[in-house]
Image (cartoon, rainbow, N blue to C red; front, side, top):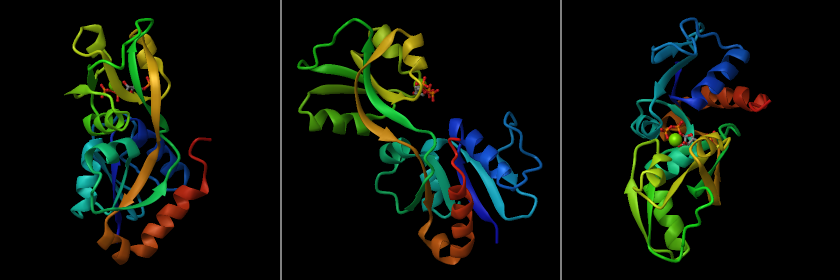
Length: 211
Ligand code: PRP
Ligand code: MG
């Protein structure tokens, strides 16, 4: 029985596919720039589907995939109560959640501020914990634009290299959470395919993905 992995499309999937290939799984139809969304390995052991990151936990929770690989930031934002097991921290896709604003233009954080973000749940919790009053505007990407065009005072977003902030004239006001890519599992699959899933985790564990 093949294990079906729902893999978050984007930065993580390229690193994970490269790693699986280096570990001996061959995916004859996979190339990094392919438009195909389903790949099977030549031994019929793994089936990998490329899924939009917020949907990974949906596939896994409903049993449409056995296993998912997705950023912890997305899990916390989109599926904090999902009925899935988190089984492994891959240690890749490391990033930090930050509040950022226009560089050199201090924002008075004691006043009510407007926050543009793809992560309204994480942002709201952060500001509530710090007793700051905010209006949150949910955006779907390119959030760096929000302070520049006057839509928001600050943004809350993930920072990996910092290149996107820099390229758009923004700077970090504060970092407040660290994340990495996680492997999650459907509870029924965990029981039914335990040996296969354990073998997959062992393969992924064996090598340092960041190396
Ligand atoms: C993510 C994130 C930041 C950027 C951080 O955006 O929202 O904009 O990457 O990475 P960096 O610190 O290495 O520059 P993504 O490219 O996923 O696009 P989107 O926000 O438009 O969805
Ligand atoms: Mg972005």
